[in-house]
Image 1 (cartoon, one colour):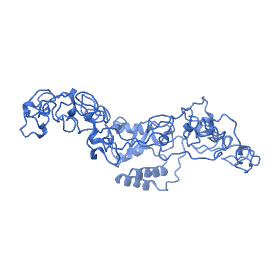
Image 2: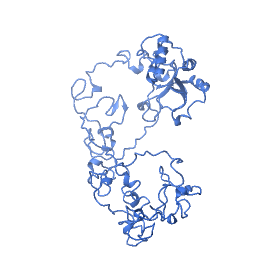
Image 3: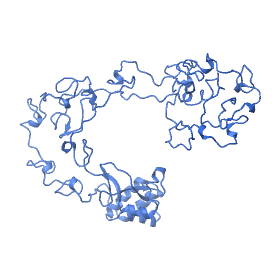
Image 4: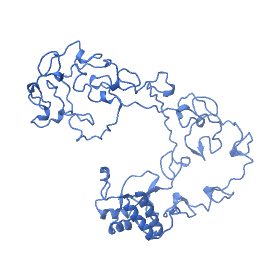
Length: 488
């Protein structure tokens, strides 16, 4: 049992959960804070699912008690209001009431954003410039030409000066300066490729490597080489050594320099592809308002109170008093940790290891369960840890082979891993070194109460001094005191 459920884990418990709703609250917006701009919750017709309470749909259509900004009723938000749009306030263009800004009779004619013509919109502009190649006559979604790379932020310099910057950055082991210097060299020599740069680095023994690895990219990113060609297979990374610095990169690393040069011919750096991503179908190339697929209904967010665990309200509205999850696990009071608790150890919710009942320690078990005599000399009145007699090895039982006369660390037989408990995954059969599971951080959990719940207070030694010499369960503590008659 965890927490107070087991006396060997007294004080244990996970880390306290932080209140995610601190300082939250609905900001009261005006009734037309976003009216007449392509719709109530849209930006040029594109729905971004913005609700009246800052993006939390649960305040309206999920059953919240906030009123709709359009009709004033509860149970839904303005974007899902079934009633006709109510005119409220003046037009944003002419400041007169009675119409929306999109229907304003006094509005100036709309202009094209590309050429400022009043005869067409930007989507129909014949002079529209492609954002990829910079030419007219097509859009970025239909462009198949190399990207026009903007080097306006790179100062003009000769190839010799740029190469000197590369050598200086490599000598100083500065990756950022090396990237800048390579861009400057590419500006002065546009036809230079990554493969040619890597070959030159190896020929001149420059401590800078261009390693091409294949890694997944998000849908809106693509690999581009120095000439602007998109859709490359491999991603170029800048390294200060040939060998992979991290074990997880070994599978991505090229086997030798020849394979790396072959990859660099089809490699580039990750850049935005320039295409929008649909919020409805998650595909690239169009926005949700022009999505050919049916509109996907978004599942409303379920509110869960972190204080009581019930639904339909937040922590700030919880009727149950707030629980201090950082309080002492022994007395329940705030201001100190369990290791500093001045109160005696509480037996509440503690399970006895002898009878299995809750409410008392094993040393106080009313059903008995063994002698309280010393396990070393057999006399009453003291425990083995306080015994003044020399250690009786005949009473020491090995935790590895269960034979008497020696300890587990001195056992001549092979180690029985079925009795070993891993300190990483808490499973039997292996040690932490051979654990197949991911390594658990040592800082995980409640650092303040970890000392009593996670280890030594009663682990294999009873309940703090009463029956510490009773036989504990098999654990992974290989060199700890033996189970029967070996506690010292």
